[in-house]
Image (tube, rainbow, N blue to C red; front, side, top):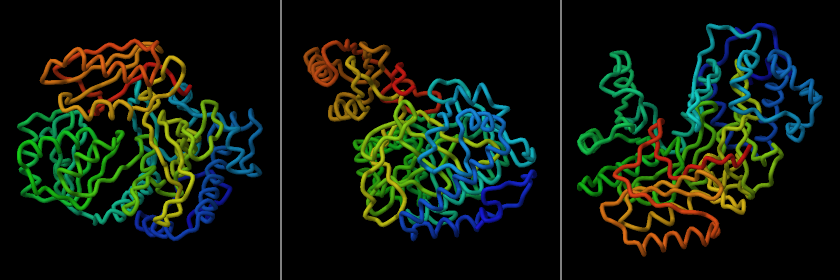
Length: 449
């Protein structure tokens, strides 16, 4: 395999030729047949390769490794990974030039950005190896779900501009890729009606979207009699998928719905298998840890912050990157026999977790259970502004009775304690985030820092 060409050492020039995407697709297709130990061994080989390279070619990590006395050639991996400090967005912003390899071929890199939960843009760099492997992992996931190359695909996604403003080249790409899309930033009844009619006529095999946008489409289709829309698979991405949303989406489309997890900085991290709907890590090109606030590993079955090391991007390695999400590993392997670890609970962004006055962490699912069962509430958002204050905005066609709101307040205080001050506000609409997503819960507190 590729790493045999450079196992534990790197040449000065990185203008090397890598295998094409088909080579990686074939390699990834064999990973399902590995044992758990074989999976771990391959992962550790790739991890060591990246760490050795970082020590040789990345100024930031040369200094860090020397400071903490970390030698990747002799380190006991993964145990000694805890020596390496957690990489955060603020650290990247302050040290960007020193995080890029000295020997990088500028023709092989591209700039990417993400706003993150704070809205402050994070700039970083990726390369063709990263893109090629990401594409191969994407093919692997689609194969799990029975989606073939060039199956028709419908997308509900955020876009900074209207889809009718796409360039001629972009429209040709969508046409050749058999993609049709609706902008999640702007979905009025007329747009949704036209989209449903297109789905009925065009019959795409694959539907991809934010969970909240998929739910919104499903509710519209049910209310307006669009029955018979079916897919081979529906993929929910880039946003928490709540059980109540899954129920509505699958009820409407009577099609299998799969949760998919990744980020712009390090994509294609985990996806649900078709047999058990367990959220498997997808490949040995991504090393994932669950840690406490000090970067120390927590045992399987315990929640913590998700820390990712991308083993495919040598232009700008993300090593122990805290992506601001929270989750936990499952203790037991999945019965589907895939060897990769399973994220038992994906808890969402740490900024989406509510903290009670006594320090207890409240998962956002508590609020979805509380409000989803009431037909009078179309949408809600719980926003914690400080340790003792919670603002709940809701959209309803009715003026909710005072005793109903008091009952909701009592249930919340039973969970969070009497010190929590709760304020309800009825709204005509709750604005989407800049990403086009709906955030059910927002906390201004730093839970993991």
